[in-house]
Image (cartoon, rainbow, N blue to C red; front, side, top):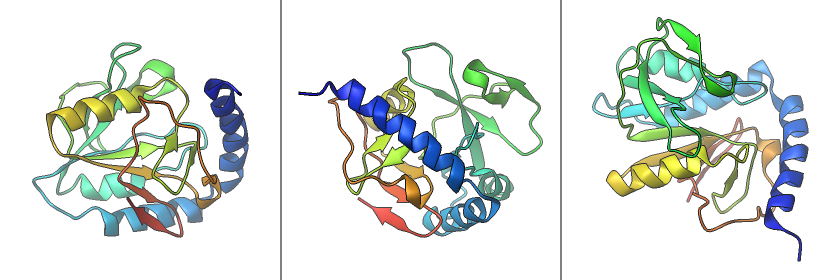
Length: 186
């Protein structure tokens, strides 16, 4: 039997190559438009997005518009092996470089989100997602779901879909996946 970590690493290598080819301005704009339909404009809900790195699908256009009427936050890695924390972000936030080459707000104002937009390397039709392998979003979604009801929305390019990802007991599924051409609820 093939080790699940070896399987996942194989998917990661393929997914990174696919994602690089799929990351276009028009695909990102379509994802942001679809996010606007999927996530209601509710002033009481806190949205957690992320500032993309590399070829990740970027929710920045959606986040910038929503930050005008809603609280928007971004993840911060405080310690390896721990859940992410989320700090308020606006398009005018002064940023600094955090761990893993991710930009984060200089001023930290932590808040628990109600909706979490999650980056993905790959996904399947069950709502399973594959990340970089650090387990940050798995720990984070688990911790948030223990505290309150949240909605986890994975965003990716449609070419990142695979038939079935290998799953481990700590893997957290998303509630919805938004691509440039489809929205899937689970």
